[in-house]
Image (cartoon, rainbow, N blue to C red; front, side, top):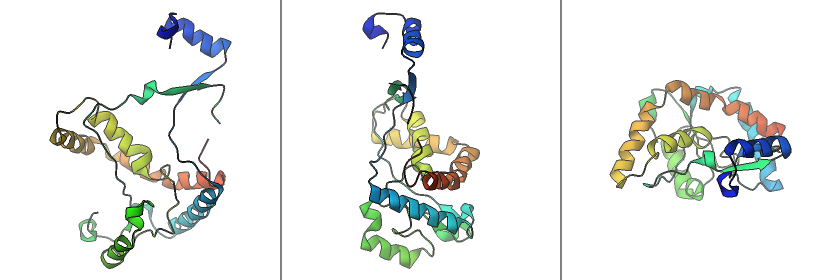
Length: 202
């Protein structure tokens, strides 16, 4: 931004911070939440908090999917906003029952998918249980994908195989404590949804 108006970086920082009293915030991409969706997020988050009172969080198996590109990932540190303020793993592999989570994508809520889940997995969150439009609740969405994209896609790949190898390599390097911290933040995030009456945390 400083280069665009031909002044030093220090002068621009002083202008933005002291003269305009603006702060720098990362640009966020969020789903639009209608009042109906907010109410569903609120009621279903309450339901999941109640379920967590009787079921151990360690039993939850979170799932998601993401499209990765062989092109270099965009540096989101450079995508900011200035403003005065910011308003399937088989069950026998795990040797214990688990609660399988998936979001409300059409492929996940299709009758054929639900039928397969009923026949093959003893415990899963139904489409009526998971809050809609809630990437802020899924550890894969709000944490893990960003880590993988930052590491595995730091540079462009020549082909798909190179991208796959890089993703697997970086996945295996993610510390267990990072994964656990992401999962353990789930109840706190549910309570945040309830506190914000179904809305996103500001």
